[in-house]
Length: 292
Image (cartoon, rainbow, N blue to C red; front, side, top):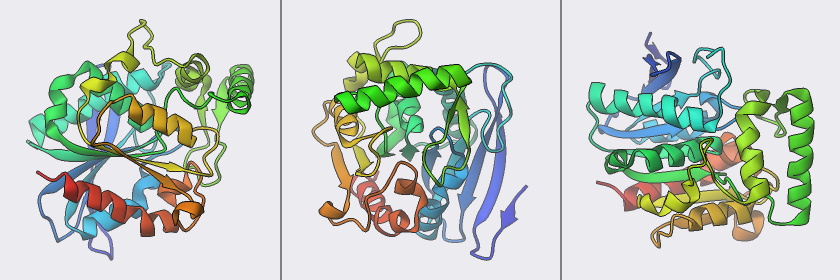
């Protein structure tokens, strides 16, 4: 059903079926000013499409069509009824989304904006499906890292404690105020704990994603936040971005000392008014630099 808001924002939900039978919610948002330029946005853990409300409002006013994908068990997507992890999102949810946009909507090129686990899953998807990278013009990441949060003793201790208590509870509770969903199952984030503790990036079958990251040559802007000192600290975001080995990639450190309005945390880097005000222009500039 299409809904038109007072801001003339048109919103339509496309339910997509994955190969393992889960219904994924893909939202199309655009305004009357439509330049036929497309952006796919993928949420991270503890969230749904609402985490992108601010930046979507900016992008659509500029004439972009935004496609926002919600993971299984999140937002309007259906409950899979079985365990899943970030690799599941990559193999099924993101794959189904790209197939729909390319084969049904007939998109030739698009940009991607990803937050946290959404960026990890997109990376895993592209490594296993390199043919799809020809459709992506640029990627803008927010708080994305997979294996660099435990490089210091304090960080490693926090991850160990988080892994231990989450295993006992069977779920991981949202740490950041402003998260749009309250928890994830322990199984969903078990890989993330292991990657950061072991400093690797391995699939369930032992596939080495870290080794293959240089195969992704799409220009990437990575935004990391000073106040995000557990999930995606600066060192972790630097290590993740460096692993692509692409000199065109750029890291932006969101902190007061770097001229930002605040020292953002893991959710506020996309969800706050300040981030919409000052980080959305950075993304727009990145898209402009790497336009078709």
